[in-house]
Image 1: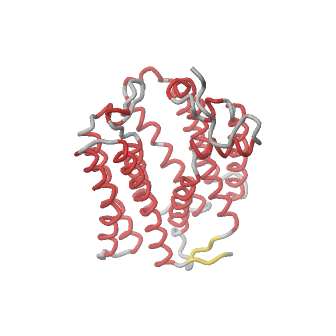
Image 2: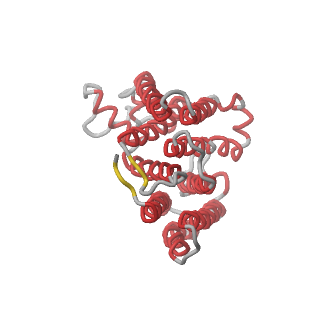
Image 3: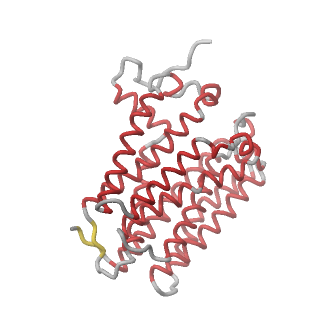
Length: 322
């Protein structure tokens, strides 16, 4: 059987930059960058809100922090590419990495550069070794354990929920690192705990919707949400987590505001409405189009969640550029 075609306009003779962009388009698209930027902005401003200063001060180093958080999640993707390479070679031979247009060696080099940038930015925030760098090292160490499946790969393969939760834990660790960038050497505000819980719930919703499959798209060796939970239960579980995330968002917005008001109560309902409807439609009639729609709307809902937090903080505290 002839090999699948390379991405349009990309061949082995193309420049590395073009081949790497093709890999990014498949496995780490720029749309993720918008979500990660909003996630970073919310974490940074929440961490900085521990200071009584008004308005909140922002500077050039914070741009380096945004690049670092983006690079951290890029490293996570690269680790996944290495860990899942053989399985993806069977399931997705058409991908850029599996075609050899980009190699695992190339990705290791990119990951090394990203880690060096993260180290430099963290040390700069601390002006030496301090809480920002220590939180980054904790998150990076957890990512390394994830790559090794915590040396319990066989057991975790039989306990998918535990495996997912162990991998999801890297998200709060990364966000605590980002929030510490905002707080510097100071203590993080208590509201960060609610933010981390919200981020975990939002990430779980996105992961569940990302792994919804129409019956004809199921693959026997893929641990999709619908294969593990069924096409009836999987969207209901995602819907339940989505509603919990909406409650957490309402609580967080009111905590940031310092008083209970109608706006922070209504906004989470509006944010959750579209993906909730999409999940119910998928449950009623599972299809590839409705699975993609659920994933897309869950992503937009997550983006809107972090934008709302940023907007609330900027409205209440203001910001200035140093």
